[in-house]
Image 1 (spheres, rainbow over the protein chains, first blue to last red):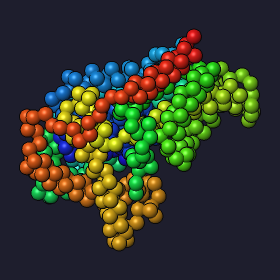
Image 2 (cartoon, rainbow over the protein chains, first blue to last red):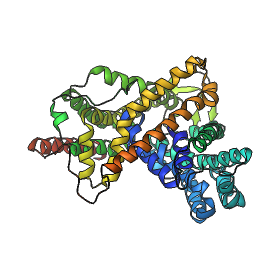
Image 3 (cartoon, one colour):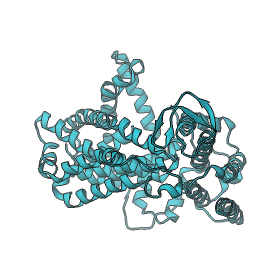
Image 4 (tube, rainbow over the protein chains, first blue to last red):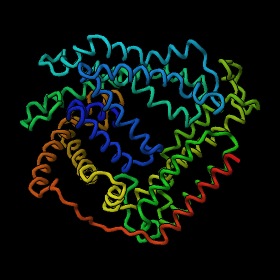
Length: 213
Length: 268
């Protein structure tokens, strides 16, 4: 549940509050379930902070797209290169089949980058997530989370591929296997978020700056 | 419901150890497991795992906790051994042959001896990585963690946020349990649902009230903090004042020495 809840955090608490709560929540998670965090603070960053940070960027893409788009490209290229090219063969990693591997990695970063750079990201998603219309809101939240989760998948997996010394074959297979999992995770996250947002709107609690409710 | 690895109040040398020394051990573990790995690295990992075992036994942590850790990671170990068995690129001695299915550099029809061994080495690497943090959690109290964070010059607000959130976890577990029971009374039984029903249906009626209740608690908490002058421009006092003893230096030297030994064995 760490990743969906971290992804929801910027929507409920605003971008800064969401990222701060993801950091605190991630560290607490590390303390109450240390066995699930073998890479310690690296795991906190990968599992909790990154989803919150990337969703925060997507819901504020109208303001931050000049930062978001280059970041997505850098994460995408780095995700393609690590670990099979960097550190590559000298650390015992095999040779991946190209251009198949590049295309498989591109599935995870090119659509997100396109969403972030086009009016869908720079105008519509930030509008939709706060829209009164339920359909637009569901769509906006789903797309924001989807774009964030796809790009998040690359830095999330690579340290473990390095740690587990993944073979080239397994690298390609994992790209294929997760291609349905990321949209499913985003759909679940969106489905969970909407009732919470609506409940918060009706709760009478003081509104948080930057939150979507 | 209680976390498996939680602080246990005992009077052992590890419990008395300065939290920063324990944090150094945790950080060095991370550095060690991130070294590039070869099949010949088993002695390096076993030395570090041996250090962890010594620290666990000196801290008088029950063996069942280590068994729990092993059980949690067992799936990962099996995955690593099977996957490396099939796909390890330097594997050439067949252990089990199912047939021949060449895919790029690997023959997916053969489990190789070298691959299985490499999978075991990787499993020990994961075990070594995962064994350090539970020790820190089980031997360091919240007030010690708070003092350690202060020594690391982490801002007081962040420290307070962390510690208060940590103390909230028991409350969250209790609330979660109460909400699940309340939903069961309304014939909404999460335990009887399969994984897909849980993902799409089960969590909404549980997480929504949970988050609302937590928001209300946080709101009350904020008022209480403000009435007690949180954020006033004075240096707050520490609940537990920690001083460094010679035994802390000795333990630190011992841990660093083992780390250097591992590095030497690994690279020279």
